[in-house]
Length: 445
Image (cartoon, rainbow, N blue to C red; front, top):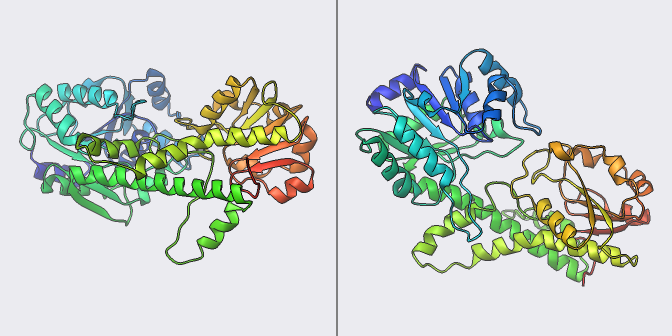
């Protein structure tokens, strides 16, 4: 099959699509293409996830507008089916790959899942198939890892026997469908014709926003750069917050006034950066520089600042408890929020995980509440009873409705550390609550 043939099949929806990896990226992508009229097969190595999907049940917890309904619709219509068998994609015209691409403790990319998925695809793909990597990858990975592995295992040659592209995802938990529909995409192809074919495909599920054709390396650089940009700017906001604490300022007032100036957009400070993307993508971008022995300064420093923030939260807690002559050791602490993002169940690289581990190491008794993470969905007010301190780590919608008076009355000692600007510091202090907040008006030593 030629790319011209594939473009015709995409236009009339007769192309058969395979999606490898049915997590936060692959599942909504598969559902959107199935809704558009394509026959879609999804492959995932987790049998329990496959079973849930084939039963029309959404395996992703948290607030995901429209996803559960769409999944039910496309499964029941027969347009979408999940499996753990790679053999089912042997007739797929397009295979999209959305597997995890973590970094190790040495900050080096760990492409085990990508390598395994690529090898399985190479063993099963038909001649003329278009393989699109949607996972975020280090610059050079498409040409340096995916291409040679597909060629070796399939026995086919790139651009004659098969086609290859990189269209990095741009989704966020809580906005999966919305981001797929409304975010611009970069379509990097192994040839300009491949990139144009990818544009034809993604135009079907992406609304009236830019779809830009380019090469694979540029697409890799764009995605890793945009997330690194965000990480650096969050680190700047966090450092300003630390300065505000040191001098007795209020970072939230500072931020509001800074952002009134045109072309200024200071991001929100907080308890750290979590999720699958932002904590690792700067290291994916930096990996190419490491191999070229290019010295880096800003990216590693930003990562260090953001990784420091959970430790800083624990220091704020220690300071607040000390003000009432209480030690962390032996204290009962309620951590509110365990996901990394508001109204999501995604706990990957959660700052709360780091904080909880530290508090437990110091001898504190830690209780955890999160309305979206199944193991922590117990009653909030029962947990808050006789608590020595509350630490707010996630700005879940449920927490915004909490009355400070009720919270104080429930706790044993009124100590509140707010890492996400959920509560008003002046109201808390007026109620006699010992309050500490990220960047909020306290000289911290």
